[in-house]
Length: 114
Length: 116
Image (cartoon, rainbow over all chains, first blue to last red; front, side):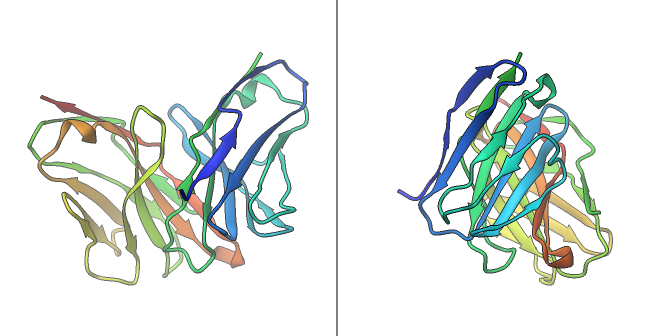
């Protein structure tokens, strides 16, 4: 089954404790992206990657890191989480053949930073 | 920078009736792509419909259709014969390729309630 998977689905952590949210897709997509969703703000892009070893900042990159060492994986790293990073996080992927392609979203990760 | 505005945070519709969700956007690009996504209580993001800016014809997908007005930078979604399963958050999104980088910009969303 073609899908984007994220782990963990739920995470409660404390301020300053490094964490990684994994994202993996099995569709051989070039493009991958991370978003955060907050009430009243919609989804905002954190980072994206147009291919292996190619990443770039989205609209809200502060406090986050990403890497793209393999085509299928695009982990999101919070080196020192803070309470303002409490949010719902989505990973998405799509083929890089132009912008009309649908972005496939993962199921989301609910992160709470105390 | 591109922006997407959904001015109505909430709407309700009676089952079997028609409802229109509004979306406007701001851009200086001439070629771009627009999308409507649905997010039910399960939180899964589901593509509803998409439109290429250079195509004059409005996109349709079964009960869902758009009214794309490029000059007005408007991209509204019409849901006909509303069903209980249409109740969800709806997000309008703009996909751009400005400066060689690709971004998907979302509106703040609109909560649709369907009354039986």
